[in-house]
Amino acid sequence: RPCYCQDEVYCKEVKEAIEKYQIFFGLKVTGVLDEQTLVQMRKPRCGNTDVSPDEDVRKRVNDYCTNGVWPMTNLQYFFETGTSDISGTQEWDICRQALDKWAAVTPLTFTETAVEADAQIRIAWRGGDHGDGFPFDGEGNVLAHGFYPPPNPEPIAGDIHFDSGEEWDTEDGGFWWWKRRDLMTVAVHEAGHALGLCHSTVEGSVMWPSYEGELRTLQPDDIQGIQALYGPPVVTTTTRFAEASMWALKNGGGYGTVAIDLGRRQRFLAWANVTMIDALNDFDSDNAVVAEVFQVDGVETWKAVFGGAHWGPAGDTANVHQGAYVGYGQRVTFRIRSIHHDDLDAYGMGTVMTLD
Image 1 (cartoon, rainbow, N blue to C red):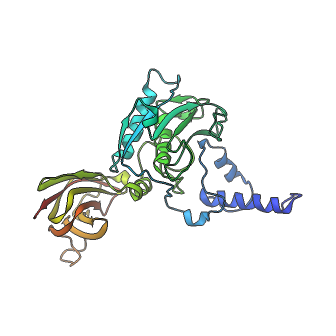
Image 2: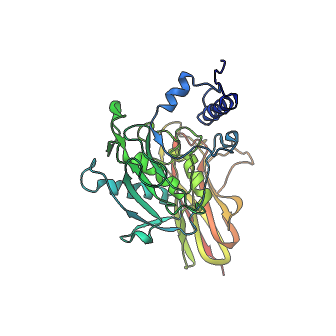
């Protein structure tokens, strides 16, 4: 389609910007504002940018992205203001639950503080031009924005702002979704920004830029991204014997990780057991589940320490058998995963016994 810009340079830049947008959202790349592109653009969304001006969007496809990380794992948050759309202080409870979802898959802990200066994350409802350089536009389009952690130089690093011009609710409005925004869905997304995650190109992930209705559960891409920054949950122990729970959930990509910190480097014996708790269909011996000593002090081992009935055909040398792992280190990371992750939830326990 011809471009009728008087300024050819400007015309080229607009075309390239549209192409980048189409690549990011997995649309047909035409370089023009076709109907499919306009439909996506009209959806309400987060106010954070998707890519930086000089970033190659093609390198971002089908993956998470990070921007900054907190140097500590014990983070404090402060509520500046709330919203009258939701009765009482339920909006604050919802924000606490949103932070808990990220804490469940990382070593992060969140504590509310009454002293604003002590907080890494400040949460507020703001309207219009509210002084941070990113004004809100009232109902529709931009719903909220979150600011990345250090090395973000801005004094409001980690802050989360919701547009007070929206109609916030404890659930999505269903058919009337454009009138009622599910606060939990948006709060989980913005908390991801405050912890260091950018927008993801994986549609269906929490960090996808557009609001598509209720999405309150972290998806595999979200979990991989946040654990790339902070690692898996950690159980700290100073005793000779320690256990940690791990889950392989369908909606988590069929695997889960947990780490046990021994306090110092020493010899240890590690093993695991697995209990399958939910098989929706095709539950047979081919639905193998394996638990591994995945890493020791961040170095991958992939040592299987428990396995289901079949990893390969019966009698195959690839079959996984229960065993144990003897190693030396301080942090032992277990991973549980299933082959048929779409129809199986599994629960397991990683165990470490020190030998020194």
